[in-house]
Structure formats: C-alpha cells, structure tokens
Image (cartoon, rainbow, N blue to C red; front, top):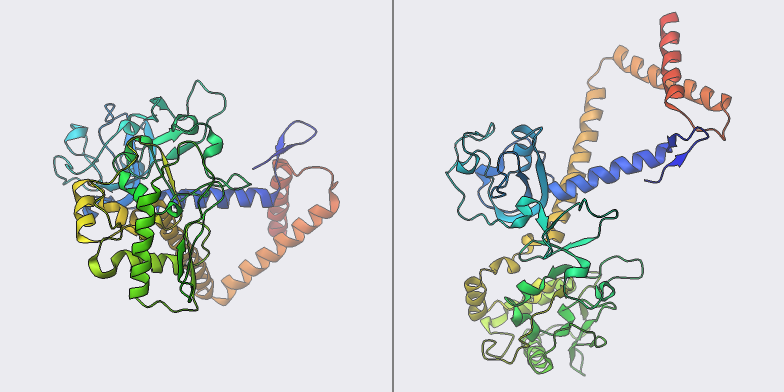
Length: 418
C-alpha cells in the first residue's frame, strides 16, 4: 500500500487504499491458513494432506516440532513463533513429549510423538542451501524465495543452481509461468520426469502440447523451447512417451473435432481431464521404456513444471510401485499441490463472506421496528455529517485522525440535543 505524506510529514492514505490493503491482508492470511479459523486443534484430524504449520522456538528451540494454527493462537500466544507456511502429511505436535512439561490447552491427550511427521531446518528458522534465516537481518532488502514442492524447503533464486535468475520462467510482468518447482537435490529422486515430453516443463515462453485427432493424427505435438543452460533433455525417451500417448488416444477414440492444450497455456480443464484419462488408460505404462535402464541425464538440475503436470504422470502398476518405493506417491494427489490448497482456501473464504453477509442481514431483519429505525436514522445522520464535513474542508488537504474524531464528536452532540 503506497502512502503519501501531508505538509506536516504525516503518512496519509485514502479510504479506498486502506480498505484494499485490509482485503489483501485477509486474503493472504486465508491462502496460508487454508481457511482454517484457528478455533480447534487439528490433531484429531490425523496427518493432514496439507495445513499451515508453525514452530515455537520458545518451547522447542531445537526446532523439532510443529504446531497448528489454533495451538499457535491459544497455547503459544506471546512466544517466539515461526510461520512455516504449509507442510504436507503433518500432525500437530503441541503438548507432546517434545514440549516436556508443556501441555496443549485444546487437545491435551496426544501420542508421545508423531512418528510420520517430517522436519527440516525450516523449523529452526533457517532456509535454502545457504542455511540463512528469513527475513535475513544482514540484508537491507529481502530476496525472493521459491519453495520446492518435494522437500518443501525455500530457496533464494540465486542459490537454485541456475546460471541466472532470469532463467526462471516468468511472464513480462514478472509473474511465474510454472506451477511447481523441484530443487536440484530432489530432482535426482524424480529423474524419470526427463522421460516425459518437454511440455511438462515450464519455460520463459510456454511450450504448447496440442492434441488434434483429425485425419492428420497430429497428437501431442511437442514444441521444443530454445536451448537453455540447465534444461533436462532426453529426446528419444520423450518421443517414445509421445508415441504411447498417441496410441492411447487412438484407443480411446477421442472425438475428431476436438483440440486440447496441455500445459501452463491452457485456459480450461480439458487438458487436465485428457491427461488424467491418458495416464490411467489400460494400466499400460505410458513411458514405454524401462526407466531404470533408460539413459537419463545423471546430472540433477532444478525443474520448473507447468500447469497440470501431475495429471500427466503415469499410473500403471509399475510406476505406482516406483512412486511408493521413492515415497513420492503424493505427487499423484491433486490436493497435495499448493495451487489446489489455495483454490480450496478461496472457496472457503467466499463461503465465509457470504455467510457473514447473511448473518448481518438476518440480524437486521430480526430487529423490531424501533431498533431498525434507530439504525437507519443513525446511518442517515452519519452520511449528512460526513457530507457536511467534506463540503467545508479544503480538498487539497488530507483528512487527519483529528478530523475523524471531530465528526463523531459532532454526531454525539447532535444526539444529546435530540
């Protein structure tokens, strides 16, 4: 929110700017909290697919425990608490053995330890390969960080092993063109992704994988991006995957007059549903190769993945077993993604706002006639007083706190005279 200075050097802001800033802050909080009101501990819900997690350094300075939103507000008020954004497959630790004598106020009966929880240096307030805090007290201007969708650590742009931050896929306004980021270390775990068409990887100018099942049988045309340092490439394997996708498409008899777009450029859900049907078709592996024996670039590099890339992943029995062995089955779960988490949060926010508006309307409707008239007269008096004030002040001058206080003082005086 940009603020101006008046003649006395006092910061000023317009009403519209103030309201917009409040709405932006509320939306940002809802996106992080996933719509969680923070009124009850999430422990009873088990290991949640994704939720906002905090680390209390006052209670666990070792950084080996995480707490939910409700416990952060109710049990650790006034403590040194770190906001970790969201974590997957996590259960609230508040009050368990890691907190010694400290007991959870909301859900005191908990297991001694949540054995499936995973912790990293984020719980100590440290991030990236440089192991620095955020915000970094040694920096005047904080650097933007990107979260890996696998290890869930955060990385400075200059530390993600790219030749330049300019290689990060963004549009002309600087907004990201990728849906997920996989860091260099984690990319070694999922090297099989290099066997898929290059369209699952986001680039500065998005490649489009188009599907046209007419007589020319042009299916999933892979438009290669310009050569860039650090890009993964395996054209032979990618061609094999595309051929298998073509075969699956022909087998499923997709309508001749439809064209689908797969990737960040897609503006509808057709690509997602198509990819899902392809990935699940016939139980056959769409990779078409023994990925364990295939020639894969041994040098791990960071990956930026385009929209709906998870939907394209093969779901044959062999690949499902591979995901399980690597402990990455969550990649197949759409609800695991940050995009889906935020989408759900926005839906909850809209429902909450509609419910609030409905409650306010019901409150007014349930009032008696006299109470209703008093409220309406009060609103009319305020509008008249505010209109009178605006007509008496210099429009070039900023409205101060003293001016606002005077408006309400005038209203009080008027009501006393009545």
